[in-house]
Image (cartoon, rainbow, N blue to C red; front, top):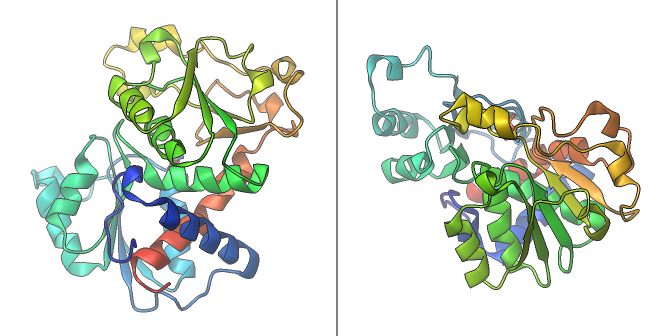
Amino acid sequence: MINNKDIINIEEITKEDIFKILQLAAEFEQQGIPGNLLNGKIIGSLFFEPSTRTRLSFEAAALRLGAKIIGFSGTENTSLKKGESLEDTIRMVDGYADAVVIRHPEAGSAQRAADAAAHPVINAGDGANQHPTQTLLDLYAIQKSQGKIDGLTIAMVGDLKYGRVPHSLAKVLTVFDGVRQVWIAPENLAMPKEIAEYVTAHGGQVEQTTDMAGSIAHVDILYMTRVQEERFVQQAEYEAVKDVYILQPEMLHGARPSMNILHALPRRYEIPQSIDDSPHAYYFQQARGGMYVRAALLAMVLGEK
Ligand code: CP
């Protein structure tokens, strides 16, 4: 049960709870989000790092559920500028709010926030570590577009080293039956060893390759990722890999008719706009599902469902 629990790492949510979240999100999408479920609740929305989709979909979800929002988007006007610590900032907001949503550039920051707070903390992306609520909406998009998750072949392409989205997705896919993962990345952006070891230890089937074009015909989901410029220490290293995987319309000619392209967004070079009209493109529908998934999560964490 996730009632009153922190949501920090995807592997801490049971398969049963994942299905409950997806089911409730579908109900909210089909029937509307009940406007009074979180009446009287206040959500702290603390974004130490830029965001469009995650922050606005969380805030829209909370408002539609009847909650109110406090928080910030950027630290410029906060006492962090005077040297206040993350923990002290969280302790303050924890005293004002019923739950805290946090995005922060440092891996492990969401856990630090959870350790400092009495109320539930939800990780909205902590550095290159994890992005568990993105993964829940990814599962929602996969289930909705493919009718199932079990048995699929799911390719992740691009920056698997710094991408918190593929880290969380690779882990959660091990709880589904017969899912085959294809990791497509240049050697210096390969999936971190600890994630690969986790997936193997949990029975995940993985193929690693550098060949995107040659893999497309064999997959059900092609999950493109942005090369995370902000995580590179040397700009030259980023420039060397930023254009390695650019999806071109002709690469889709041999794709299965039901194959869908996902992307957490924002995109840079990896999906040109010429792909947007393809019947395979599903990334904007994927992002729209985020509000329903985050509404379901808030409703369940705050114990109102
Ligand atoms: N997918 C995602 O996390 O997007 P934002 O950075 O815009 O929140």
